[in-house]
Image (tube, rainbow, N blue to C red):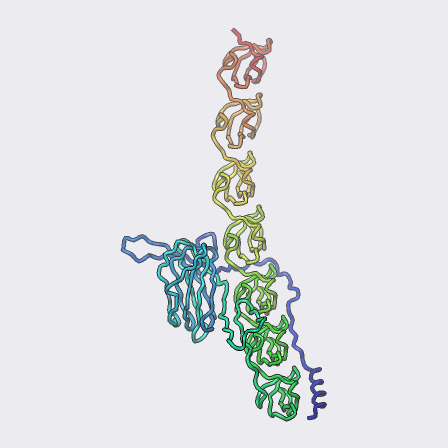
Length: 590
């Protein structure tokens, strides 16, 4: 076929060549407030308040029959699809809360595994090697490995293990045995081994910096220009060389087209295994939107790919592709996350360009989103853990359902339906006692109402019930005061004078200088200052209780009580009731 005819034919085909398109999420409808299952990292549940799936299991330390029973706490973590790279990958495992560990146990559940090393990192920064986990033999399926008693007093914050799969990607179950509480384990990071740089030729002056946690893939040597070599022609058509011609030309067949075509060597590129960190067979993301698989890579930085949900093969630039990885930027596949602070998500694929393919709860299909829009589901953050009962916004009693790595939490609020997304900084943990107020105390609220303390919180708030009122109420601790029997010489049951004029009886005395009283001639009870109350005395200024007196030089009467403030309670002949008068206005009758 002549060169000009071929070019015209190819141009026509290029115009009619289908371009792959895929729909992506632009704006998801708000699904409403949702109630999701609590996701917990360990497979064995800790003691309350956390509501996870961790089971505290008591075991007995082997000893003589009279030895005491020692309780141990087991936290488990499953790790799947472990690396087959020579020398093994490093698995960094965090403890959500530091714990004293007695020992480590490991079971191989799928394929075979060799442990190169394992170490514990303590809260003081010490690294402690686990002897039984160093250079082990290759463990077969269902074989287990147990460390000796670690005899640690320091609390462990993380575990680092270097392991290598044999005969296929291994799955394991790692168990940490805690001395005082359940270790909550989370796989934080997987670091693949980096391929060694060859001695010759020397490294370039500006070496390529690999994506964090990912190994460097060396560029492969492209296939030679030879009969049978697969090539891409004109950046768009894949074919095979059938004959080498003179004059810088080759004869090729093109996939999907009949006949042979004579083309210039400058317009073709041969196939290679790997280029720019991308290899044939890799799962990829194309144009930030379409997931697929690389079928072939070519030396001119083109690749032929299959795109999920689309038929046929497509030629694209390598620069438009991002490789699929197991973990990236603290995210890992098959982990639970939240998307856009609103939607529960499961991460299905991760890509080196900061994108993820996720399944959204309540929505069909797969969606491509940015990692910046995701937050990992974790067990604890800032001492707030799944299952904790807390206070939200200094007002509402809440329970934590989920905790996220972006400082958010999903909670239920007492008295309100559904779930709510809040900032962890708006939550406060309960405590036993604060500022002398403890859970269970019977106190006075606002100096007038009997109250019982249900919970005390670190933000100086308390949850209380109030006598005569339904439900619970959140109040400031400063508004609560303790009941006592006596204060400032005034005790419960005393008969006193209130405001120098009214006879009163003390019902309750409070530590903040108040008293609950009844007043003769008035209904109900009244809260008054202790300073407004005056205690009676036997005699003062020559006037005693029981004396017959003349009041104001005009009225005769009898002294009922004498008070230390210079007053007396008297009855006057011809007048009903009692009267509070100054002692200086009374003259004792002989």
